[in-house]
Amino acid sequence: MKKLFLGLAVVSAVALTSCGGNTETVKTTEAQEGATSTEGAVDYNVDTTTSVVNWKGGKTFDDINKPEEGHYGIVKLKEGTVKVNNGVLEAGKFVADFTSFESKDLDADAESKGKLDGHLKSADFLDVEKFPTATFEITAVKPVEGGDYNSEVSGNLDFRGTPKNVTFKANVTVDANGVTIKSEEFGINRKDFGIAFTGGGGSIVKDEVLLQVDLTAKPATAEVAK
Image (cartoon, rainbow, N blue to C red; front, side, top):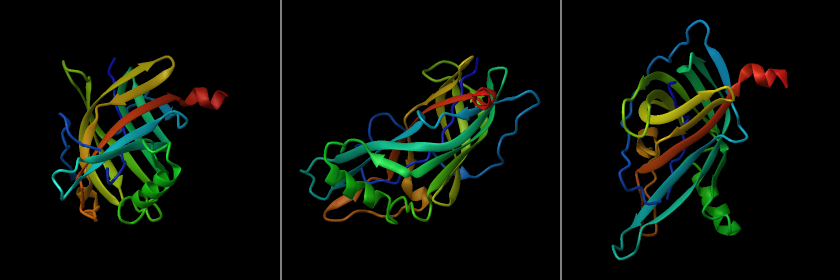
């Protein structure tokens, strides 16, 4: 069975975690036509109670002796549907709810968490008041042979009113209970989506933001039957 991913990915333009390691920043291209499903495709609706996009971001400092700083957190999915035919992902579209955006590493410090989340939701970064959601629409899915992931997913990420096509790898399982999706951790360049804030007070916000999607979807017919 083919595993798929999807992601809405979407997330952040943040000021935060060491975005290092072997993660690549994916290239963005012009938005493309969305994928279409064939006759017999089955709809699976995203379980918004469990599905999230995880984010990480970081900053460096003018003082080279000062260590890098980072933060991480989640964005919940508001809604979404994938279309699967004989275990193969054919199409899909997801909506991320940026009003739910929050840092998780600061859960024990409510004051600092409030200040950070407020700044990241401001016009300097996510501009949630103007752009409360972001969408990801699948444009192509290709099988991957070997390696840690079985699919390469391309889609239009419409984030902060800027649609760009991105491609990343993911694993997806389709069975009687629904669809589970786990993407690789991949990077996007926040400046590709119009986030130009560079920092202040001797700090420099990294251009790369890391995203990783954990998604569960259930058969639409099962939800209707409840």
